[in-house]
Image 1 (cartoon, rainbow, N blue to C red):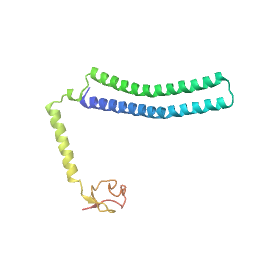
Image 2 (image 1 turned 180 degrees about the vertical axis):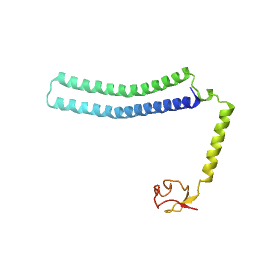
Image 3 (image 1 turned 135 degrees about the horizontal axis):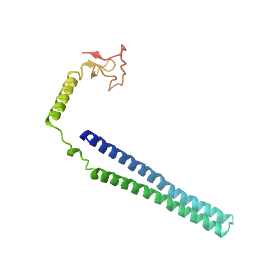
Image 4 (image 1 turned 45 degrees about the vertical axis):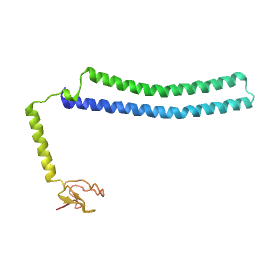
Length: 167
C-alpha cells in the first residue's frame, strides 16, 4: 500500500469516525430531550387517570410504563455514545494492527526529486498568473482564469464578455 493510499485510508477512517460520533451526539441530544417529556406526560396521564377514577392497576401500569420508557430512552442515549467511542477505538486498533502510519512509507530519492520539481513548476505557474487581471465589478486583483470574484461573487462564464480585465 502506498503512502498516499495509507493517508487516504486514515483520513477516511477519521472522517467516518467523526460522523459516527456526531450521529451519536445527535441521538443523545434528542433522547435526553425526550426523557423529561415522557416523564411529564406520564405524570399528567397518571393524574388524569386518578381524577377520572381509573382502577389502581391501570394507574400503576401507566406510571410504570412512563418510568420504564424514560429509562430505556436514557439508556439508548448513553449506549449511542458508548458505541460511537467503541467504534472509534476499533478503527484505531485496525489501523494499528495493519501498521498503517503515514511516516512508515518511504520514497526513493528520484521520486522525491520528481515531486519536488513538479511542485516547483506548479508554484511558479501560480505565481506568474496569480493576480494578472482585475474584476470588472469591484476592481479586485484576481487571476485572469478565475471563474468568479472572491470579493463580490461576480461570475465569469467562459466566452462571456463579462470577464476579468487583464492588467
